[in-house]
Every structure is written in C-alpha cells, then in structure tokens.
Image 1 (cartoon, rainbow, N blue to C red):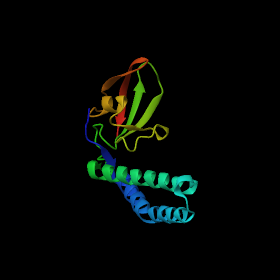
Image 2 (tube, rainbow, N blue to C red):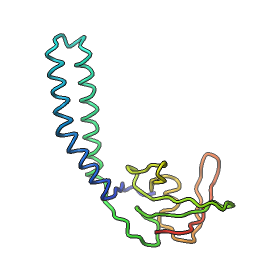
Image 3 (cartoon, rainbow, N blue to C red):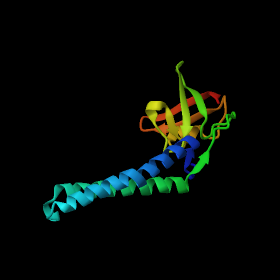
Length: 154
C-alpha cells in the first residue's frame, strides 16, 4: 500500500486557486459579516453572529486542509507508460464477463467514482498499481474476491 498522497498538476492548480479565493474574498466576506453581526448587540442570542462564527470555522478548516494537501502531496504527471501508476488510464475486464471498464488512477484527493477516477489507495487501485497489460489482479470486497484482467494501460 502506498503511503504517499499524490495529486495531479491540474488538481494542485485548482487547490491553489481555491486557497487564494478562501484567504482573500471569502475571508473578507466572513469578517464583514462578523462585524455586522457584532453591531447588532447581545452576542449570546445573536443568530447572525453564531452563524458567521460557524462559517468562519468551516472556512479556516478548509484553508488548513488545502494547505496540508499542498504541502504533503507529491505532484505527478501521467507518463503514459505501460505500468499502472498515478494518472494511468486502465481498461479492465472482470473475470467471466465481456464488458470492459475504464478507470483512471488518481490520488485520494481526486477520487470520484462518478467519473471513474479511483484512488491508488482504494482496494482496486492498490491491486492495479504497478501492474501492466495482461496481468490479472484480485482484491477483496465485502461480497468476496473480485478478479480483473488488465486489457490496456495508457
């Protein structure tokens, strides 16, 4: 199992843009909301103030999360080789079936099953990682082991 967190250059750029927005306009907006809420008086029963503080907490938590991701993740570019790695597009066929599935191996921050992007830390991602075209892989699920054959890697 890979301990390293990976992100693509595209994800890094998207996180940097989000961070800039959160630290700039969004932070300023919340501070203005807090100032307005304070001006309403009694803070103990001031719903606007409590909501603004909650929003501020969520904003600061997201900022910390993004900064942590950016500082601890390794940025990778797909190399397009024949070995499954971060950024690889992998075509697989489940044992006993004719239908093929296409997955893109990504870091855990980018995983999105609706777009067939699977994390290198997921059970199938771990099984595929480092393998090549023609290899067979197996991984356990709550319903038992699943076996795939790698049809292509790009």
